[in-house]
Length: 350
Image 1 (cartoon, helix red, strand yellow):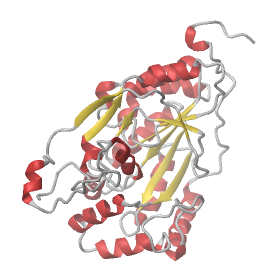
Image 2 (cartoon, one colour; image 1 turned 45 degrees about the horizontal axis):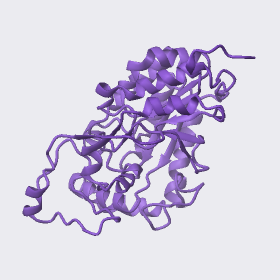
Image 3 (tube, one colour; image 1 turned 30 degrees about the vertical axis):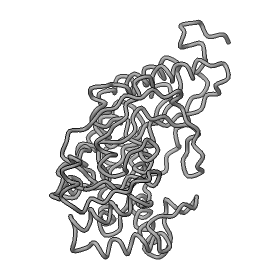
Image 4 (tube, helix red, strand yellow; image 1 turned 90 degrees about the vertical axis):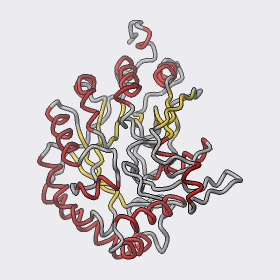
């Protein structure tokens, strides 16, 4: 099978919930599944959009995702395995079959209109990118921001796409009331790596420009240097930290790559096709930082890694951050402005 340009994954790994197992080793199956077909958009109608986050590693209690599947195509993405629950593969399917939650804004409005809702910052999105390419057309994320702004409800956003600048008007207004914080995830400045590792994301340079424009508009921005992949982008840490500071970010963080189940298979296939000269070394080091496995599910260590390689990378990051960032008070979300009646146009009672 020829290399699939514009996609991170290069085949469809098996879905563990399906009885039929995929084996894309033959030409017959290449004809059966058109890997180069355009992205397929699938409308779904969920009954709820705000989900509880049960992880001490995530600084949010709630999250919401207007899309499932992600055309950005980051081959390492931990969210790939969630496509299994929809009956699809974590491989090419994850990038080509995008589930669109058209009713997400209405569901959010209903949730925030409830007298029983207790205001708490919601993460948008946290699973798949809420500013992936199709958002330019669908504008579901923008409509959800309009709902949040109407209710004066706090939100955190994370993205790899400079498309977020389209919504700078809303974000700037929310920032004035401490209702929003943005995280821009930046993996590398090496375009040869990015185009294959996360093919449909904004360039690293464009993301830093987004950090600057958001910061200049008063929106607090955190840069996530993530994931750190040993022997691929760990050497870039000082430069990425420096550019984060120079472009106005209020903070910078990082976490180690985790390759769970089918994602490990997809990633190893990817690296052997794209970086064969260092494939063995990278896979060995990824296992080293997770105690001999390609991932670690233990809270507290799964995102940091363990062992001497992980320790060296953390120290490298710590020294870089101390050099370029000063300790600044973290923004506290304003929870006092929200009221369930604001979305109906009623006057808030004090």
